[in-house]
Image (cartoon, rainbow, N blue to C red; front, side, top):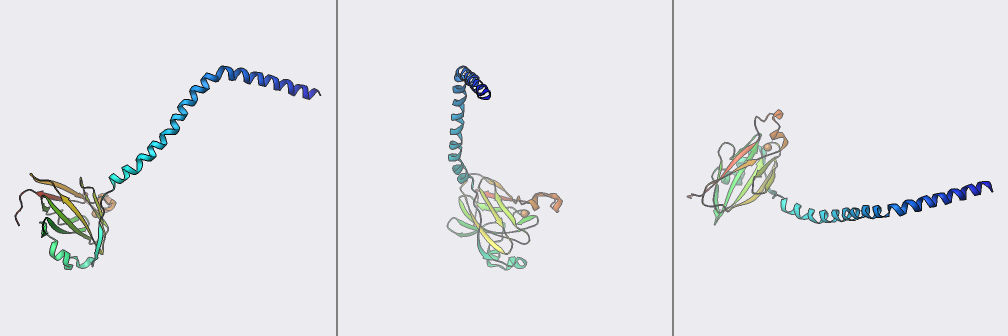
Amino acid sequence: MKRRKYLTGFGTMAIAGVAGCTGEEEPEDTDEEEPEDTDEEEPEDTDEEEPEDTDEEEPTDGEVVAEVDPENISDHELFEQYQNPRATHVEGDEYAVAVEAMMYIYRPGSIDPIEVPENSVVTFYMTSRDITHAFTLENKNINAKIPSEEIVEVTVEFNESGEDTEYEITCGEEFCTDHESGAREDMVGKLQVLSSWEE
Ligand SMILES: [Cu+2]
């Protein structure tokens, strides 16, 4: 009986205490809950925006169109026809350039810049003599892997006109930018869009 009385007494004190506290704190609790609701809505907005950003940034990749012997790249008909610094006219506004990648150059591109006419659509046929390289064109959203034993193609539109424009071709593969691997400088090439062009 004694024990029960103690418990009852304690319970009453506790309730009184809680009631007192709740009464005083109520306005504060209400203030604290409002920001929580706002926080819960924010992630929903972020989720909706993410897919849009991903679609816009996705670069154009290459497509495998043929197999090739890495020891005899220049014997392949695409390279026999198109491996020249100056783009080869195919038909209409279409041109073609075949590019061989190797540690640490593009041929053509690194020693002789690639030349294409303005207002043209140029298909690049590319393969590697050794490791996997890449063909990245700044401002054109092109990022194509260049594998060995396969020829990949990527088509780029050059709509600029009126003056010559120069683009840098970059590889960016770790092996070609890490100077400890043997690369003296980053693997790069040049592409020039010429406003004056005669066939
Ligand atoms: Cu490379």
